[in-house]
Length: 91
Image 1 (tube, one colour):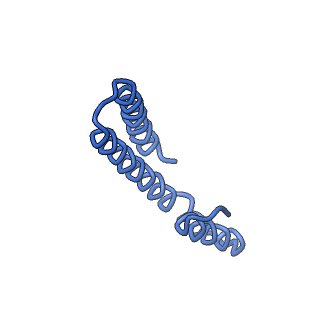
Image 2: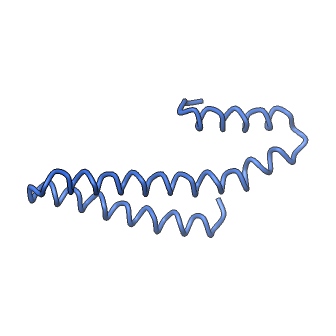
């Protein structure tokens, strides 16, 4: 993972952790359900953004390196890994 990506991911994750703690507080305070659901939706969107950031970095580093290399088995492995993760399956 590139340093720039690691820094951005760490910052985003800290923000997401704060959002999750905030939802816990909202539940403890018996806040309006729809407000809680909206915050949960915001967390899900933030997680999706974090996922995209990390996946983009993976494509630019690990996958690019594998596809540029000579080892066909490594290329196949990276493609299968991407297909599995994008399809929501475990490899």
